[in-house]
Image 1 (tube, helix red, strand yellow):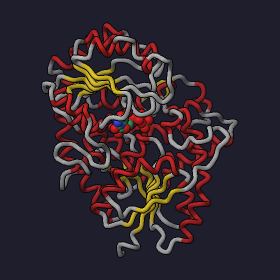
Image 2: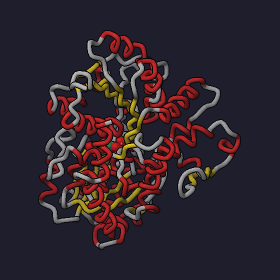
Image 3: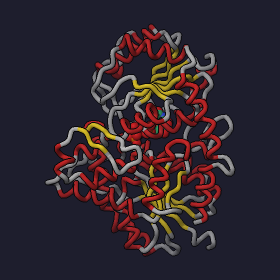
Image 4: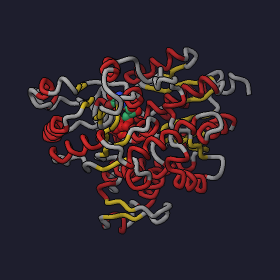
Length: 459
Ligand code: BUP
């Protein structure tokens, strides 16, 4: 088909952990696929596209007003405006874009031949069916999580599921089991009596009938689970193309559509190799005051260099974002606390960073692996317990240092683990470095992700 008929509609979910990797994929499709691309966003999310639009001025945007929803404060259009407890309402609000998209499609002189949309937007499968075009579900999660999630939503109405504290997933390779509280947040919040929840369940399960699925993973990361997806979806319909952020990156690890330069990188330039622990719990989680205090104390006791990113979705109190008074002055010779957005992939790529204290969000997992940085895992919610299992038990590239959204780590012990993780060559560190080589190979010509990406574009 000619370039004009190869028009794709890309529809990201408005949360950084979902949007950034889909924009990485879009960047690649715009550079190498020869596609005409339209990205659908709502007004307040549009600025997040600017780096990509600057790189590819030919990419079009379809900006639709954010539909109102009774469970969502007016003005909220992105998870960062409300926190991840707002996911349910954001998904429900966006579902109302079905008709405006159909109108746009019907009046377009050269409408899209396919939709690529986030797996949180499973209803776009029904939209694609209505428009009679294929839909690709994009997953920035592990293949293991896709299986766990689909199983949960299939079984959620059964007595066994509601009464058992531990769920064993015998239909998934290695029969993993997870405590109820370790399952994805939306599954835990499910309310059978609420019709909106059943719509959500239908959405998630609709993903399984999408024409194809693209996953930000690579074969050496979760091959068994990826292969199992291929078995379920059918050969030629599952593409493991990760780490997607590596695809558009330059040799120095910078990805022009993700980040600009930062004074943190200049600060890291002055630090010895593997001497800094990077501390970040993703774009959504805001720690409580007790957690912030315990973490500050652990970092102080560790005596190590650090970069600590503190998220402030809502102001907790008047005390400098909850960071203990005087802490930053006491550690200013060896640590930085950042209250804002940082170029995470470039930080993890920096030779000075030797460890990552992380919530184990999937993007953070993939980015740490792509850079050979060992993880000190503190899974809190969403898919993070499942990711931590993969990192610690399956891959051996991480240790668990704490667990749970409300847990407060013991600062003496955490400080010791942080210090030790930087000072010795642990097996986790060696395995992380070995896996990095596999990640880089995967996206190089003839690597597994490179081949899957080619096959996806061709198909
Ligand atoms: Br915070 C932060 N800079 O300052 P995860 C995050 N990121 O580039 P989450 C920055 O956001 P989910 C910052 O590199 C990663 O790509 C980071 O995704 C980037 O966690 C992304 O790690 C964060 O998956 O999302 O945000 O909790 O709930 O989807 O796991």
